[in-house]
Length: 120
Image 1 (cartoon, one colour):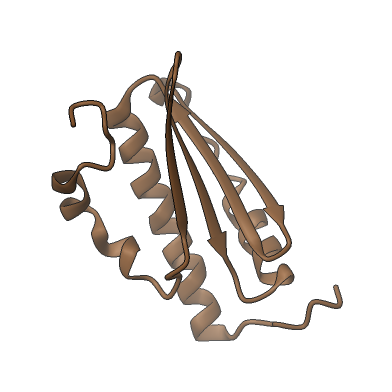
Image 2 (spheres, rainbow, N blue to C red; image 1 turned 45 degrees about the vertical axis):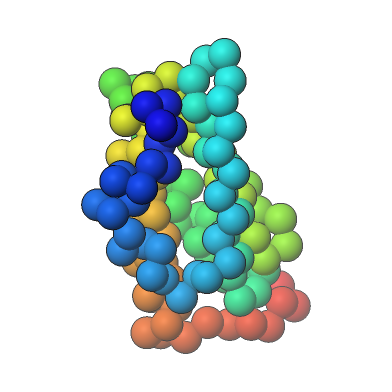
C-alpha cells in the first residue's frame, strides 16, 4: 500500500475526525496521472448548515508549497470536497487538517445549535 494515502497505519494517527457526529462521510480515493484525488461527501443536518460550513471552510486556501488543490461545493445538505496532490503524504496531511476544521464546525453546530429550517 505504498501509494495509498488511507493505509491502516496512517489512519491510526489521525482517527479523531472519524469519531465525529458525521457518521455518513463518504470517502472516494482515486489515482490519476497527476497523483491522488480524494472526494469527500460530508452530510449536514440542513442545506443552511452545509452552506455555513462551506463558507467557513472555503476561506482557508491550501498553501502553494503544499502542492495540494482543494475544491469545495455544496449540493443540498452535502459539503462536497475534492482534494488532489501529486504527493500522497502532503494530501494525507491536508485532509487531516481539513477534517480538523470540519470537526470544529460540527462541534460548533452541536454547541450553539443547528438550524434545520431549509427555507433560506
